[in-house]
Structure formats: C-alpha cells, structure tokens
Image (tube, rainbow over all chains, first blue to last red; front, side, top):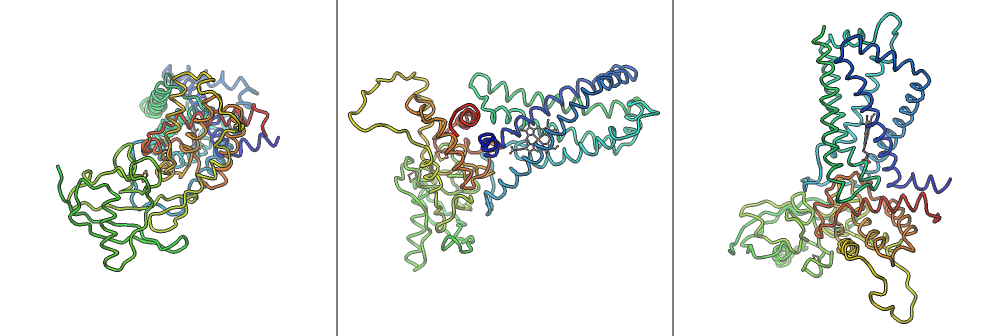
Length: 213
Length: 254
Ligand code: HEM
Ligand code: SF4
Ligand code: FES
C-alpha cells in the first residue's frame, strides 16, 4: 500500500483527492437541485418527492455516509493544502497585482469552502436533524423561510457555493489531467454555466417559498 | 520616441540570507526610455557606488531574454507588466515620468534571499537532478531523425523546452508552487520517445523533490502562465498530473 499513500500524499495526489471529492459534490449538487426543483410543482408534488427519496431507506443512508466520507477528505485535505500554501511564502509581497489568471472563484477557494462548511452544518441542523414526526418537509421549509434571516443565510450560501464551483469544476478537470485544446474551452464554459445554474436554481427556492406563505 | 523620465524606486534591500530586510527609496533621474529596466538599475547603482553606498544586488547574465537569470517583482508583477518578457527585456518606455516603482525579490520559501533582489534558485536544479534527464549510452552518435516524431508533438515538446528556469512562475503563483516549471520539464521529455523509458520514474521523483523543497501546491490559479516570459502553457501542468497519476497508480515503478 506504500505506493498508494505515496501517491495520495504527494502534492499532486492531495489535489486529486480534492478533485475527486469536489466532483462528487458537484454531482450531489446536481441531484439535490433536480430534487428541489419539484418545489415548483407545488407542495404535494414536493412532499411526495421527499417521501419517495426517503423510501429508498438504506440507499439514502449509504449516499449520506459516502458524502460524509467525501466531505471529511475534502475538508481535511483542503485545510492541509491551505496551510502548506501559506507556509510556502513566509514573507508576502507588499504589492500584489493579478496578471489575469486569478478569478474571484480561484482566489477565494479556501474561504468560500470554509463558509460552505459552516453552512452545511447549519443546513443539516435546520432541516435534517429535526423531529419530523408531526410535520412535512414543506412545512419545515415554509416556517424557516418565513424568517427573512433564513432567506438571507440560504441565498448568501448559495452564492458562495456558486463562486466555489465556478473555479472548482474546471480546476478539478485540470487536476485530473483532463485537458485538451478541443475540450478545455468547453469545460471552462461549463463551469461558469454550472455555477450560474446552481446559483439561480437553489437561490430562488427560499424566495419562492416565502412568497407562497 | 526617446524621452527622459524621472522615477522613484522602492527597492527591497537585505544584506544577507538571514537578516531583516526593508524597502529603501531611490530617485532615478534623467532615465532614457530606451533603456532596459536593468540598465536603469545600473544607472542607480553607479550613483550609489559614487556615493560610497552598497549597490543594489540583482541577478542577470545574457540580458537578451534567454538565460533566465534576471527577475524581480515590479509593482506586484513578475518581470514587470509586459506579457512574455523577462526583466532584462522590459524597457523603460513602459513607465511614465513621476512613476513610483516597487521592486521586490521572488518570494518563496524554496527560493531564499541571497542579497537584496538575488534569490537562490538552486531548488530548480535539484528538481532537474531528481529526474529531468534521459539516459543515453555513450558511443557513436545515433542517426538524426532515426526515430520519427510527429511535427505537432515535436512542437509541443519544443514549447515546453522553451522554459528558461527563471522562477517567475513560482514568484507569481499565489501558492509559490513550482508546477509550471516542473510541468514544462516533465513534458518536454515525456512527449518524446527518448523520454518515455524513464517517464514514470521521472514524474514521481521530480514531484516528490518539488514537495520536499517546500514549494506550494498548485490550485490552478493560472497566474504562472500569465507571467511566464516564455508563455509556457498550463497544459504542461495537466500533462504532469497525468504522468504522475500514471506513474503512481499504474506503472511498476515504486
Ligand atoms: C464543506 C466545506 C468545503 C470546504 C471547506 C471546501 C474547501 C475547498 C478548498 C480549500 C479547495 C481548494 C483546494 C485547492 O485548490 O488547493 C476546494 C476545491 C474544490 N471544491 Fe471545495 N470545499 C467545500 C465544499 C465544497 C462543495 C459543497 C463542493 C461542491 C460543489 C466543492 C467542490 C470543490 C471542487 C470541485 C474543488 C476543486 C478541486 C480541484 O481544484 O482540483 N467544495 N474546496
Ligand atoms: S515556466 Fe516560465 S516562468 Fe517558470 S521558470 Fe520556466 S520560463 Fe520561468
Ligand atoms: S538576463 Fe538573461 S534572461 Fe534576463
């Protein structure tokens, strides 16, 4: 197993961990968004989607454990990379200027990532680890989004997620070595389209629900 | 058209590797816009020498953009604001009368400061020593062109081989990563048949050496590519990533 730990432990290997787990999250976000869009089909349609999802039972648990595992890897590796990168330049420049490579997304990866971690914890406490015996998920949502502070937190977090993946998606492909003059421009474009889709797709749900109330 | 300009310099001065440094202000007057940046520093240094002061130490050799010795961060930009130029090829016509120019050395843990603007880039040599070579038997020289190489591949290898090892990529990288340099060196050999036999060993050894020397981790910020005087593409970093994964996971090399 030495070869495996040596590969994963190297700088490029750690980046691979970030890329694979990050792409996993992007898949999760896509599925999560597709499910959440059922909200536009009305309260009953949405609740029946939630019931169908939960009826998958052990499969859902398996997916949750997978996500937890990926999240642990992503966060621990990300933190280690951030620390190492910080240490790689002990004396900073007094003048910093971009040459045109950096973007809002790329420059803020560790910070947007950390905010996402806080949000994920908040999100789970808000909607996952709650007693759902006498209520439907839709009721939980509408009571949350009756509060403008919740709308703000969710919308803000979604924008942060969009910024994170605007760099993350194409970066993951580059890290995996998927680069070709014919496809790379498409992947770069896809990152932007994906992040906008995530931003708009998730972003309007809290506002929409609050309007229904 | 030639003009003469006056500028203010804020230059990082540091007497030696482990002493505290700081910025000093100098006035460069009557500088011809035809001068190169280094010639401008020469003028300042001449005056400092006449005044009995220590001239500003900086690296340079060819002064024609091919050796890779020169380099400093000018107003936050490696090798100054012009694209695809080394510091020695930057001309004063890109500056205006009255400008203040901040000059800092490459900043990276792996490139310790020797003096003022001179940094020790021998970390790059160590990366090359780790695997940036091919092994050839001595004896009669092999026939030229005995191994056919497609034109496009030869071009890609030549593009990677244009790297002059100046270190601007490390200096410009927000993480002080050496992936563009190492990617270029791995690519120029991995692309060619002559480099294939040792490709797996090379990828592992060079990446491990790079890590050991405390360069940062690439986060695909693309600042290196934008600042590289030879405009080396980050496609070479993607190739490095592929070569490393192949070597680490599917080659028999440990
Ligand atoms: C939970 C909190 C999160 C933290 C703390 C976090 C942190 C980070 C950090 C620090 C990086 C940059 C690593 C580097 O380039 O050196 C990164 C990259 C990435 N993140 Fe996250 N992230 C989080 C959540 C997410 C989520 C929810 C997604 C999914 C959409 C995601 C997708 C990605 C992707 C695709 C990359 C790029 C991987 C690469 O550059 O190879 N992250 N993350
Ligand atoms: S890749 Fe470009 S910036 Fe980096 S050392 Fe080579 S020539 Fe200099
Ligand atoms: S002095 Fe040789 S490249 Fe600038």
